[in-house]
Image 1: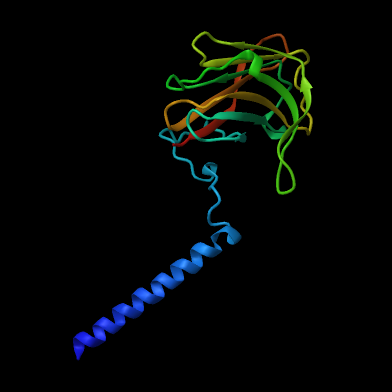
Image 2: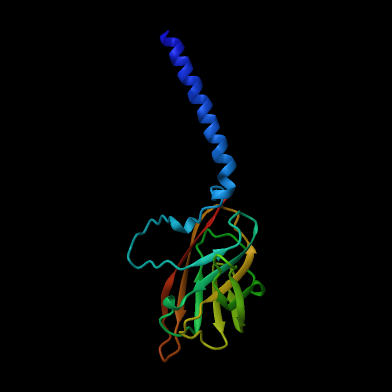
Length: 193
């Protein structure tokens, strides 16, 4: 008798468990369970010092070795003064080919619910990529002003071969008598399988 009740309970548990699993999986496209999670919501860094400032970025693909477009965004709050020169430093283990012809500096419109992020106006600039491809120097023809409009360095390339997180640090130089590079912030990008 006791074994019969135990078997009936386990049969009901399996029946209702499978039913609820099927219902949830069929509804997942409609309630957004299958959408990719934005990894920038959860960050892990070894060095938790107060000097770190997170900058906004967008990338079209996070899959390794896949073609991707990166928007390294500089909002108004990220620019304390005009920018005469911008420098992006990649970590040593970032193995990707960066070509100056695939770089541009733009005044952008940040996308959202109704639209995508896009380049509104291309800013004439000179780009210098270091030989080891670990640093990009951006020299706009006119300094990037301190206004309300967001700007971005747009980079098209194939993602690195190795998966993981990469911290790209941004430094800027302001126009003036003493050119000093100041830390603007960091972009923490992720590459997946």
